Image 1: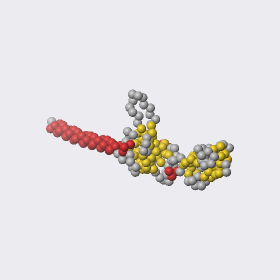
Image 2: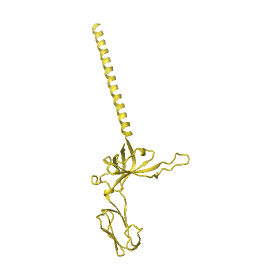
Image 3: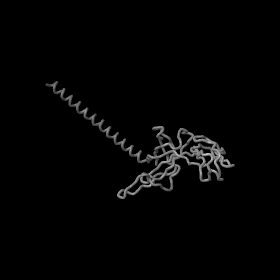
Length: 217
């Protein structure tokens, strides 16, 4: 009887110890979950997510100052050119580039009459590439300021992260692509947020690529 009672007492002690350990483990798990949720919301509250963005550079149009017949086009799309490169000849005049860049479009139609309104070629300067995000006015626009840190990804390169900073917030809006009916809420305006990065550091980034970005407050 004594052995049996002693064994039962031992089992009870083991059960109590097991329960206490289980409670400690449960408490640690709960604390970890709470801390994780808190950290998540703190992180998300400190940044603004922009789902729609693309890499762009200002387009430079090359045209003639004197109307005439387009005699020849001396460049092709994708070609890198230097300043003062002759890109086309109109009448007795040459059209030259004023800066280095990449040709992105050519109007290769010799024999056609052209004026100053006709872009014989279009080019961009890769050093002026920016990530342009399209942000609705109610999605945190009021928190966006010039100089804020930005992390962005480019669809063509998966989850690889790139760094930049807010260079400009457009002073005026343009309408979003969302169509609202009379019974729906008011149309939200969309603003462009331009992000500067170092093109030399990221030579794989090209004009027109789709991107996503996170702006840190």
